[in-house]
Image 1 (spheres, rainbow, N blue to C red):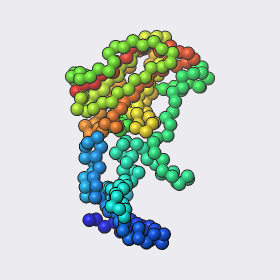
Image 2 (image 1 turned 180 degrees about the horizontal axis):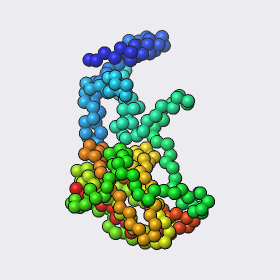
Image 3 (image 1 turned 30 degrees about the vertical axis):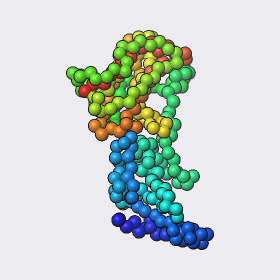
Image 4 (image 1 turned 135 degrees about the horizontal axis):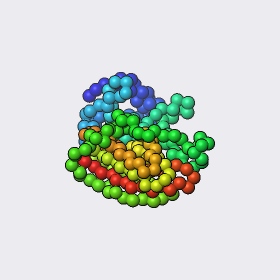
Length: 258
């Protein structure tokens, strides 16, 4: 068994404190390290006996098991380890002395106001290639040309709405590494096309927001990594008209290729 001296010292100190309240309880209970494994959706993530590599490079217990005086067991995992398994962002808030789980709320897409008063943000006219979030990287759509079609979420779907349009999908690399979104602006109002990775516990990791003018067509392509996990593989898109009560008159396709 690995020796976790500093951690063990803390546990011993805790047990000593407990012993002042109930000596019999402290004497009969115990703490074990790495005596259990961890699986996610039936897939082994940590095997029994394995340690967890902390961000500072140190090996620490992956699972801590408290065995009470009756033989009952309670397993403990670190918050960081749980966040990594579930694809949830974790941050330490030193000011409030707490751990924050989940990303900060994403910026909203501003669709109201007047175009000349600065209340509608100006977005890029083309995406920034190479931007990566989780297992997704935005790439040149030309790289998906000639690939075999494996899935269709939308196929030249025509939409007219004043409330914006959104769609998302969970993509698995074994079904194809290329996800391609095509949006054609059939109306007269400029449209903003958003893309991002939806996080497990709320939040949204945004790729470039791109504006397309009347009559224009925008194609965006994303490469998904071979080792993408199920909980981190949701890609979401939105199309919003710029301006007060602007109409989105669009044609949308979202397809997967291999």
